[in-house]
Amino acid sequence: MQAYKPYNYTFSELSERVTQILKEEKTNLNRIEALKTILGVIDLTTLNGNDTHHKVEELCKTGIGFKNENAGIPQVAAICVYPVFVPAVKKALEGTGIRTASVAGAFPGGQSPLEIRVAEAEWAVEQGADDIDMVISRGRLLEGEYDDVFEEVQEIKGVCGNAHLKVILETGELETVANIRKACELALMGGADFLKTSTGKIEPAATPEAFLIMLDTIKEFHKLTKGTMIGIKPAGGISTPDDALVYYMLVKNVLGDEWLNKDYFRIGASRLAGKVYDEIIELTTV
Image (cartoon, rainbow, N blue to C red; front, side, top):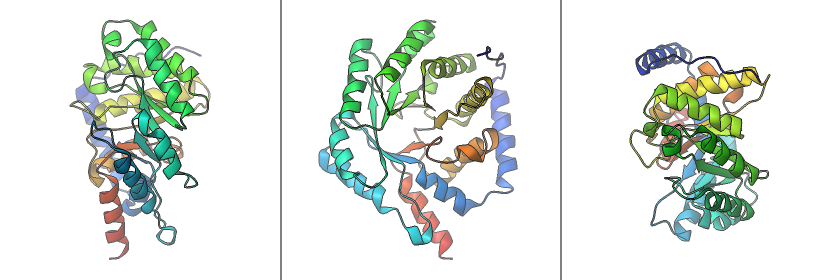
């Protein structure tokens, strides 16, 4: 594979690009169909210290309950939880087609020995996780220990089996455009199936500017590998339909309609799905 091209955008230039892209995309936006797509790509998430089996089982019921075939309304893409809840979620979702997603690898800090992080991911897969959402070691990346970041992604990918690996960059902690770009490159070389913005545990979480860096890198990777499609997932702070539509329009513009499905686009959120569903109902009954 050829080397990536230099990436010389500033955050200010990225903000200008975001503004221009949204202006272009809003012109032809079909809001109802976009919201239906968004609902169908949501990873409905609970990642709190007070999570219980009852809470995650109720979340599963909520995720399943959005589906309305007559109205063309989908269920969510996945339920995302801590590893200890994977068996309960897997059981609750049996036969629905909704994926069981688990954070792993010392989420959210990533500050544990690599062998422990790998073991946690492997255990989650053994319990039935379809998706693994891992975090990179941001401190290592900031220290320039790029080989370590590549290795952790590669080793966790190695125990995922058929599970998809989403690599969380925690872009809000990476400080510069160059660091975010480097994290993208290392994650892709290590075997990521998805790039994910954030854990949702720090501010800033997902931002359109960081997301655009990730989209650009995925697009270049697609070209360099002659067609390999890598997914993308914004997460953290996306709580309204308008928030979600920003990321939908950026994906559509940079990567194209081929990415606008749950195989290549997810949105991590805990408060978004119900609001999207309510607006779809409101718009379709007017």
